Length: 512
Image 1 (cartoon, rainbow, N blue to C red):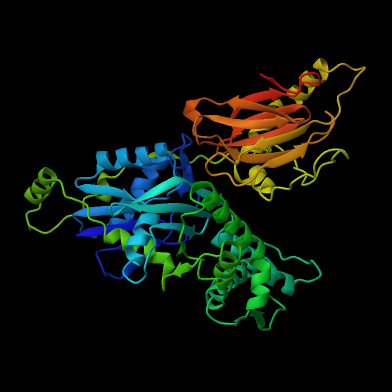
Image 2 (cartoon, helix red, strand yellow):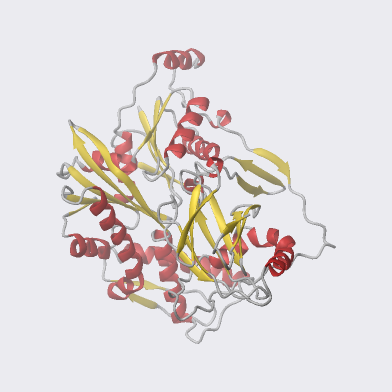
């Protein structure tokens, strides 16, 4: 019997066999899938303890947690198609080291086609659009001698997915409640509870609007004793930008990998039931759309139908140790990777916290330069990833050094900096911004990903430069900060300084 597991950041889904009902479990960390294959460990606080675990070990441990108490001779694990080869390899190696039976990673696109082919006619070449909670991705499959294989390289668009739709809809509803811009105190327990209740209602309204023309919400905020009615046309207007960006990614992937061969688009994931998704695909691509009754579980149901041979030696060993003769789980939680545990030490109350620089959302752009693209993740880089506090120790030193190296008679003008991330896994935008004089506050910060070869690209005043971070940092998330004429590259998770790059007024760029 093959048990299938799909680790999602919206819900973990388990199917214990062909035709079995889907078991829903609590979701995994939203960052986990994107972090597998990187060298940055996951660090989490658990009460009075600090847990540290490599991302691939954490992923396999999450699989073991999902299988706890479920007997299985073989296990099919649905992993993202857009994972790098390194990410897939480290997970397979970890499974081999900790599992006592057959475990195999499965493509969600291939598994979805297997499940969908029972009810729909699937063309020889099909594009699979997967809209999950944190990202959207496209995989092109073609059939050769009865076997489905991936054509080209899967594309991924992070951020434009289910969580972003929830956020947009939540902000829209809050705009009704506080039209004058007045906010609520986030520390108020009553307000926090009302916000959680409203978020659940927003998610439920999103699902209702997939099949009905309207949905009603009843916010519990003080002074908001009213019912709010949301109609589908209004809903479509709110999420239109996200849907169009997702379909644009799908269209580009088809044109790049198999423009003339794709016969249909198969939709999977939790948010593809929104009618606007099908409408925009039909208008932009002119292809038939295949939509299952339950697209959110299509991949895991197809994975349960995947045939995985059981290794004879492991099967005999497992049965020999099982006195009752019943099937055992091939991946036990107590045999899964174990995190390093350290006690959590509170900071001394007497030590004053280091002030966090304020990142400006906008900067001055010269008339002959392109318009600045604002990055909605800028506040997240400062507050959520720990980069800003670590940099405080050398900000002033870097400014003094820069002042000493710049001729006083010819102060440099602004430097136009572009962080090129379109070819790197996990990135979905190109960040552009312009520096200001050396004595100014922080200009901006951007989060990006190093590519599979350990490189990322900068364009300074129109000239392209490649920054070699080393193969050990391949696919790693880094934060790029622009301070005057200095560019600092830090680990996103810890804030540790990796590189300092100096923008030279005469040569535009100088690594240091």
